[in-house]
Image 1 (cartoon, rainbow, N blue to C red):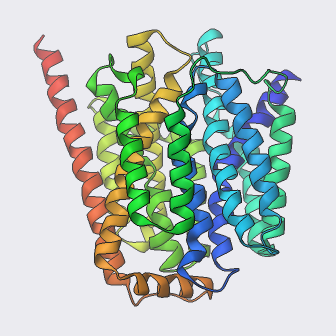
Image 2 (cartoon, helix red, strand yellow):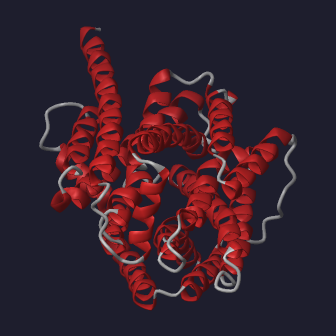
Length: 425
């Protein structure tokens, strides 16, 4: 019975993590085709990325962090049900759903990490046992895509949060009050909320810069090797590529239907990536990290050709996730702290994600005028292919991909040097 509860919770965590990337782009097609139509998705993603610092006070108690995520998800998905009556409800839903998709899966993954260590599980369960999770997700994706109804979409999210709350092993855990409150975190959250609703780029930039600085100076990472920092940031810069850029390159330029395939590619990487990475590694005579970095670079290159785009996404997600696992293990070995390993790694991954967003949005605004970007959104809302601005969007793609590749190469060269030093010793 306990095992089934854990499986149910894991499935809900997966859905809460991934499904909003299907729901929010769909909202753009249900409004009047304005640039502001992207706002619910932008709010969702902003609060998803900012959750680690906004709720840093609870990072030492991941069960409470998970409960906060579930409460946020329940409120956010409930508000989304009323978006057809008042579109502001969709905007507000992005706050709750964004927090839920970051906090709840983080708490679940941290708990899984502890269970694995305490039970001394050396071998992971076969990913083929997770095939039911894939089928359930694809079934929900099909329902949402066919119905194309915001009511169905948010009702599904609400139901998933209810089931997660029922199956969450810490649902009876009392929500504890943290020892210290960092009031600046909540001030930053208010700034972010106002920035998104007023579409003030300058205000949003101030928020992102300040939050990035706070994450970088987070005391949890002060005594960890720079190697841990680089690996953790690497996942944020490269591993979140599918969600950061694919919405623009695939969803807006081509169609939302092609965008769905990037979501599926990410899901496949989560479920079957570890087995695939282990199999591939046996064909190389070099260390694991170098293999992971080289294939990540290959995946980035593959995103420049549409027929191989989703394959590239699969490779990027698969091997950056493996680098993230290496960083988590390294943190645990150096600190003997198993209660914060996943959370701290997630914090530094957020830094990388923000940096990549600066690069992507900065290059888009430099290469595209706001009017041209708005036209792309209108075409997206009207289910039309948008090729007028393809040169500028491809230019932003090139800038972001080059940045990712250069960071990967830097990490690869540094790793080769470290491996060489080990051999000399």
